[in-house]
Amino acid sequence: MSIKFKSFSSGSCGNCYFLGVFSEENRRCEAGVIIDAGVSPRRLKKELQCDGLCFDDFSAVLITHDHMDHIRSLGSFCKHIGKPVWATESLHRALSRHTMTRFQITDYRMELQEGTWNELIPGRISAYCFRVPHDASDTVGYAILLDSYKFVIMTDIGEMTQEALNWARQADTVVIESNYDPEMLRLGPYPPELQKRIRSGHGHLSNPECAEAIQAFSHDGLEHIFLCHLSEHNNTPELAYKESLPFIGNASLATLPRQTASPLITLAY
Image (tube, rainbow, N blue to C red):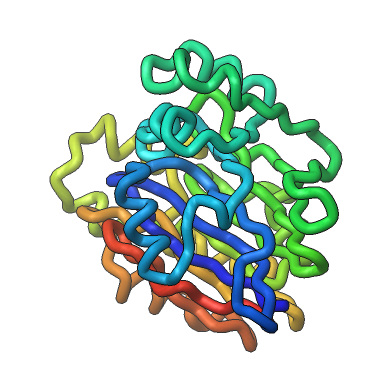
């Protein structure tokens, strides 16, 4: 058995990730999920095919929140792929009113129970949602258990919470937002009101804040850290990487590309 991860896009242009459990005997995906739906089904199909995968290799879609870069193609996912869409009750209410999803999502709605593990694929993949501060209708991070492997993702998080830190302290892999460099934001093209929104506790996590969080949750069992949702105008992969590198311990560190797909990454055997 191996655990594999792939990012299709990570940033304001769109967010979408694949996570799966693979058989080492025949190298086939036995259970998989998609996190967020910010790329088109056509592009998703093409990127999956590059790694010998298809729509049949995932059985659920998890949604973190209802901003466009995370749900832009969710209606199309429902129409053309037809997989269960898991979200909190309050997020589902928002999605049922959203112009991009309200006519398509009804038949695929699966409600996450809060405060407990939810079996997405019985016996193989479960998810636990935890709230994070962000200016959407409802925003959650996820702890995802794949057999016994624990994966945590927290993207679009205005400030770190104790609950998020607690989940990360148990994780084998953490995907965490490192959105902006404070000086680049201050000197960049964004107007003052947008800068204020980004810096607020319900905006995005800066490189220094991300590094501080990594220092707080780093532990001996942590194997991989991925920095996600880097700003196109207010950050660079080099700056984000350099800021967090001193605090990763024995874990590997990588930044996820904004508009292109990552390789299919093996997290564990």
